[in-house]
Image 1 (spheres, rainbow, N blue to C red):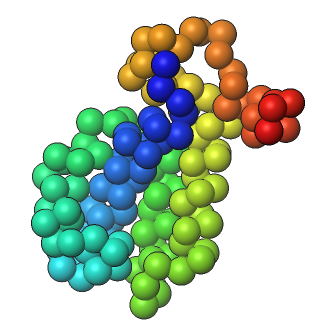
Image 2 (tube, rainbow, N blue to C red; image 1 turned 90 degrees about the horizontal axis):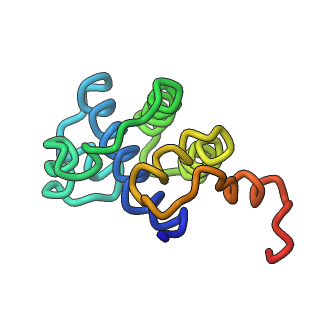
Length: 131
């Protein structure tokens, strides 16, 4: 069984980065190089996000994609990553874990997760006595 943070790091965050990259280029007129600089990536990594080699296989809900658009807009108006951009990205992950969107993805990627699992939701609600 893969822990939720591993799924988030390996699948969700790359998909979020790929969406932000596309937003910066397609909606805000950034070049690949400038978008890569904004995200703290190499141009090569940016190219892989745009080609869907990274983050391209993970489907995100329309609500999550709208939130990513807001993050990209905020980032486009700043010199570099800001604490606000980082905070909004973290809020997005927490929101996904609370909504159940993440649970469906987690079960799809790790067949060892039982249908009854609600660990992320309980942890975020403070019901996990081990934390």
